[in-house]
Amino acid sequence: MEAAEIRFSLQRPQQHRDPSMAPTITAALINSQENLTHKLRKPLVEKFRRERINSSIEQLKSLLGPEFLKQQPDSKLEKADILEMTVCFLTRLQQQQQQQHPAVDSAAVHR
Image 1 (spheres, helix red, strand yellow):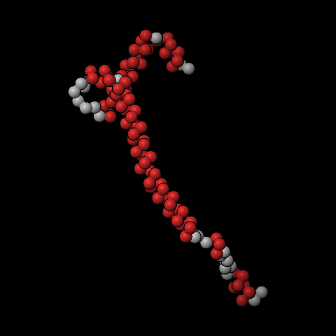
Image 2 (cartoon, helix red, strand yellow):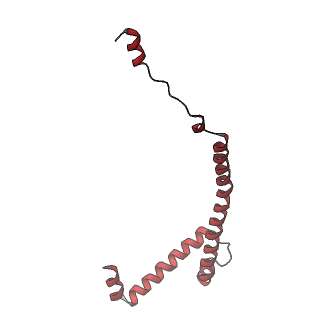
Image 3 (cartoon, one colour):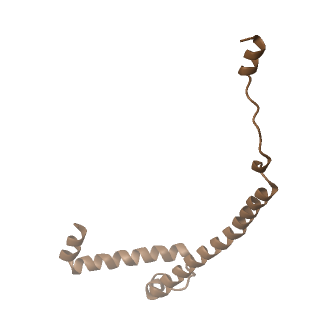
């Protein structure tokens, strides 16, 4: 093998690029549209999530209305207050049920 042949064989072969495989403007537009759709949809999804949370908190407030009035009759309750009072109410309710039916609850706990 001559020196010219050795150099040629050691060189990296040129890659042939098929023009049909190159990225196109259409692909860029599709990606751009997907990003735009996501950016437009995200706030809407977040709005619906907040509405569901607020609705559930209002339902808790109405279900436990008398309990809330006992604790803070004249003040406007924050969402955190409603959740804390709900937890306290459910904890007391659970304790009352355990006192009334200790055998049933202990069997359920040990399953």
